[in-house]
Length: 185
Image (tube, rainbow, N blue to C red):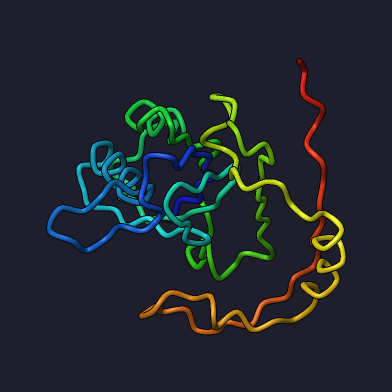
């Protein structure tokens, strides 16, 4: 049975999405999910994500899919997965998918959010895993650059060497700067 998963995770302690073929591989989101599914089903299960994330990247709603043995299916996939996954990875939803569903190939769009902390002296501890300390930014220059990101663009120069991605042209539908909510203190 093909299973569609909706995932959320804090990627701080992971080396990205994809399992790395190394002698002593670092922890990855895919590796943790596959270990959890192996524990639940007793079988090796390959998980395919809608996209690969880099080390330290978080997700609020990443789609993935996997093929699981029907004879070992628990009543509640979400609950079963969350019971054995590390606390920084959660299955938000799990449901059967059509047999030809593919998390990456069927994705209609993806949203990326980059959060910057502009105070160079420090980052509040609760924000440390979630912001990039870079400040100060030239906001006028960033606003002026945004329209140039929109439209069909070839991102071949940004792909990893040896990737199996078929095409590198993507359409950027929206790019904007949004100020963070005011500080509560």
